[in-house]
Length: 210
Ligand code: CDP
Image (cartoon, rainbow, N blue to C red):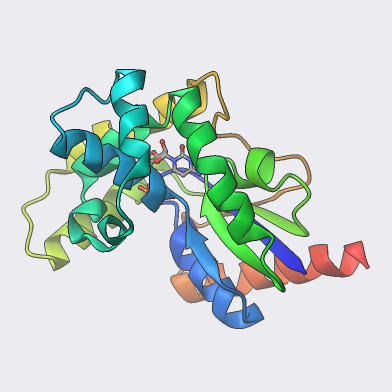
């Protein structure tokens, strides 16, 4: 069984890298941010307050089809996800689902904020993907343009900084590099180069574990 943990801040490229690693190693992949996004969107739909733990907790038993809702991908829902994910009860409610996915026969790849620290601290390989705030905002900008949006660079930078601060300073499972993780800074890398480096880092970690 091979478990690979990919963590990092918003728009660092961790999702793209996790999916590429999944194809390369033939493993199933879970984007754990989607679970928090689903909770955030459910709270909104129910008219609840994302900063209120009871409202956020009530949203944790969302219906599975919500995970396919395209609205989950918006920056607004990303911020809601970051707000509901502060509550310890919400994190606890989502732990088992993530651990079950990680420990399925053969193993899996999970990407998020606390995979290498909390969900799978004994993962066989751990990568922490990052990039400068400016580069990450630029990626969101290009993405929004490509989808017909009218993005504003300054507000994207502000959103990303606010999300980083909230994710890194919360009391429970804050975003940080796990013990034993390798750092991959994608600021100056093409997607292809970032994927090649990620595979090299994972190969070296798996080799070292033998
Ligand atoms: O795609 P992006 O990196 O922008 O966000 P995401 O991975 O979908 O995560 C959205 C929010 O959910 C993050 O800002 C975190 O606050 C939260 N999250 C978390 O707390 N733990 C995870 N394992 C994944 C996401």
